[in-house]
Image 1 (cartoon, rainbow, N blue to C red):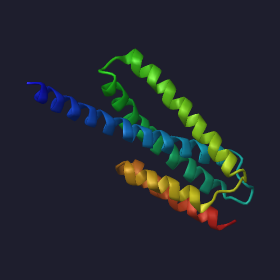
Image 2 (image 1 turned 90 degrees about the vertical axis):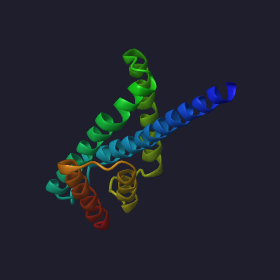
Image 3 (image 1 turned 30 degrees about the vertical axis):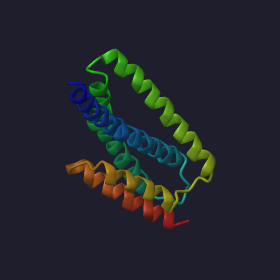
Length: 152
């Protein structure tokens, strides 16, 4: 009887770990998105404004997708539907995301975008792929990021 309980517990822990693992990955991705957006708020003057807008809109749509479809529902499920616990956990996620942004700013202090930034966003997209217009906007954003990075 004890063996059956342990197996059930391990399956539950494993599923919870996978859910939390994707949330961890996505909070890193949200940090990258915020970092790139911050760079584009003070983009070099030689970047075309329409290109900057394309990147910012595409990344914003992707960020909303991550929050709406992955982070928020998985945190709620992880907390057994407890909205208050989920709200507190979201604060922890946001705090960690801010740490990621600060680390990236220290590592990449220059104002211009680098191909590394586009690669990071693309790697995120491999882990969580939006669909429809969100996917189209994300593709446009990443392609435009590469274009801007090549201008340096």
